[in-house]
Length: 89
Length: 161
Image (cartoon, rainbow over all chains, first blue to last red; front, side, top):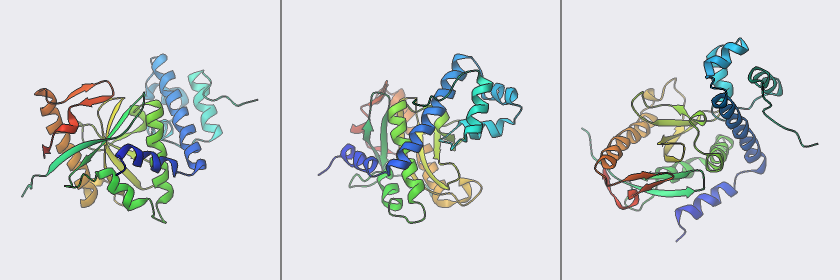
C-alpha cells in the first residue's frame, strides 16, 4: 500500500508545470514582500498608506497567492524601496 | 445533537520548512484532504483551482506556512484558515498551527458570502475548530508536543471530537 507521503508527491507531480510555476512565482513575491515588511518594521497598513490605497486592496495584493500585474509589483516595490523580482539577463 | 467523532492525524508530507498533516474521521484512515482531492482533481469546472491549491501546498513546503499565505476563516480564537485562490471559489480549510505546521482539512466551492451560510463548508470549519480545541487540551496534558516542524505523538492518538 502506498503511504500518504508518496500519494501526496504524486498529486504534486500531476500539477501542470505552468500552474506550478505561476503559483511558485506568486509565493516567492508574497514571501519577499513579507520579509521586506518585517525587515523595515512596517505593517500592511503602513504600506497601504504609503501607496495611497485602501488596506483592503493591499491585503488582496500581498496575501494568498495573487496574480499580480507588473504595474502592481512596480508600485509595491517603489513603496517599499526594495526590489521584489529579478529577471535573468 | 452533537455526535462525537473519532479523529486521527496523519503526516501527508514534510520538508525542511514545514510539515503538512491531515485529519481523518474514517475507520480506513482516509484523510479529509484525500477526500478533497478525490472530489476535485477530476472536476472539469474546478480542476484549475484545485491544481493551484496543490501548487500552493508545494510552495508552503518550500517556503514555510507564512501567515500571509492564508485567510483567517474560523474566528478570532482559533487558527482555522483557508487557502484561497485568487478569483477562484474553491477553498481548502486548514489549521495553521505555526509557520511550520499545518493540518489540512476538507474544502469545497464557496458560493455564499460566508462559509457559515453553507452547511457543508460550515461543517468542515467546525470540525477543525473542535479538533483544535481537543488538540490544545492534549498539548496541555503533554500527550502531544509541538517540536519545530513536528507534532510529536499526534499519530498515536485517536481524538474524540
